[in-house]
Image (cartoon, rainbow, N blue to C red; front, side, top):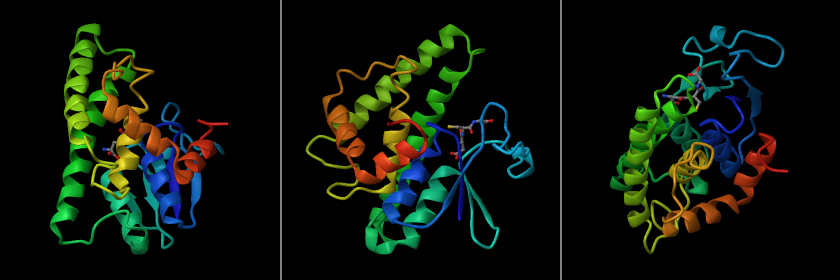
Length: 202
Ligand SMILES: N[C@@H](CCC(=O)N[C@@H](CS)C(=O)NCC(=O)O)C(=O)O
């Protein structure tokens, strides 16, 4: 498999999932700025949408969209318990989290990275993020992970997008459960390996 990624982008979530799953893969850097690979290949020729993550399976099949990609990865390593079994209520709970993180958190951060976003709208995004993450903070009360006692691919995704709070000036300093949870995730060997591979940690 190949994972097309950009350092620190949302592709860190499947990057973490691949290491948690212990699967063999090749990371391929695709710049979200130039939309080129390191060898100069036009990334639009591989993913016409131009964004990461993108997972290329061994038979050349391309899988897009972070929440779908991390569930695919989890299902390749069922003994690692990165996602509950398909068709069970806990699996829908995981999908509920992945959808929430994607639509309510990830995509509210995105405008904060764009230089052309009006400041007024950036304030709206920051307020919405604090409100959504305050709700997450309450959900984490008394829990190790989003799904309870076990780390799941939703945790890798939430960790990835909340990494962006600092560079975008979203104040999560009062969210004690979320901060403690982030420390727990950051300490995981697979998370450290993925972050080192992306040059985010020494
Ligand atoms: N819907 C996609 C969104 C992915 C996305 O927003 N990727 C960003 C990085 S976090 C990106 O590659 N942006 C560059 C671009 O859109 O050209 C998913 O959830 O996988």
